[in-house]
Image (cartoon, rainbow, N blue to C red; front, side, top):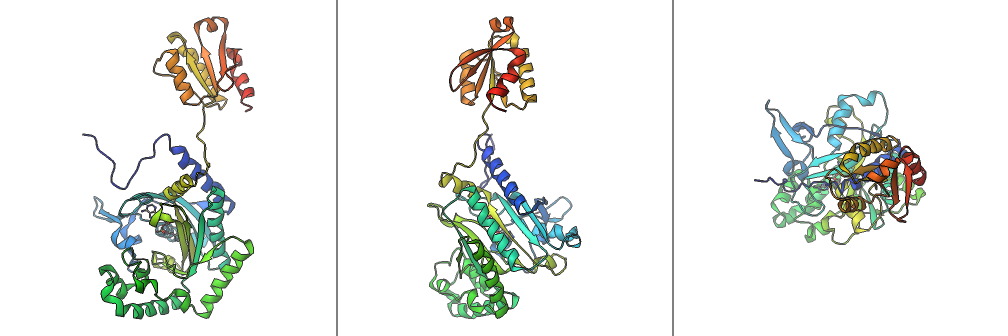
Length: 422
Ligand code: HAM
């Protein structure tokens, strides 16, 4: 019996992988401009990396894949990148060599969510983290980077939404106010939100069940509770953004779904029809306690992550021509089975010259081989027949102009390199 893929996962097939490769290349190129270095951390971590006592988000309490390994260790498949990066930052004492570590990462994450378009149980993120300092210029740099990235990808209908949760003190005052505000509405809230009300009322604001409730819609916002220091910090972030003239909007209700944020939070949203709740392409914010909670010094950081499936869906929805599959430079068609060794050598020589080429391995008749070559969009056909071989030549046909020329076998490489202007 054939076995199917797990619900919420997908395969990247050979004719789609170039899109992923192009996206990854873009990420590497652009992040390089911002002097960010790649970091690769394991997909599985000890559960404690994510299941910290302070972390109460749905993502961690309800959506993680947890298991015991054969040595009875409690492990979790990472639901996001940040916690693992910070675990590694602390474990490798990266703070001793750099005051500010700017890194990026690309890789799969796992969340037990209800699968739908743009929401999977295994999904790819690329993210960045700048760890070690607190500076409004850095918050702005990351928002500018996120904006720059989507612009360079060619996405147009995209909005950058920003908010501030304020420093710890402002955030706590706000939490308290929010709790008092929601208490009279407790009975109207969903069961989860009743628990959230006690433990972390901020989470009520992004509840997937209650988000349309009047009380949720009219709730006070973090902006109402920012103290002078937090207000000044946020203003400086905006000053940095304003000078670059990137477009953004302040979203007073934005609190984000994870618990580790304070000060600046932001999301990148696509205005794309049919995207529904999956229109958030990426998001992030500042975290001041994560490093110390994971056993490191008292240092803050800021980061964001984009969902790569959602980026590809957005590129498709906007019809952005952002990647091309590599086409074959040449395809060798062999008329006679005995000439296959000659073809092998021609291919080897051409590949040494970095030409992309192929031939037929299924012994099809000429017509079949030609069809295959055209399907692969080969620019040139190298036609090797008995008669030609006796003369030491091949026919080379330009598939666009349909012009065919005879070329001496030792000159094939030079001929094609000139024609292809390589
Ligand atoms: P997040 O908002 O949970 O943040 O995820 C970031 C992005 O990952 C989302 O905006 C979305 O595009 C994508 N994503 C999340 N869940 C799924 C899913 N089930 N299927 C497809 N795409 C998904 C974080 O993960 C934080 N670690 C971001 C961050 C970095 N904050 C600070 N540093």
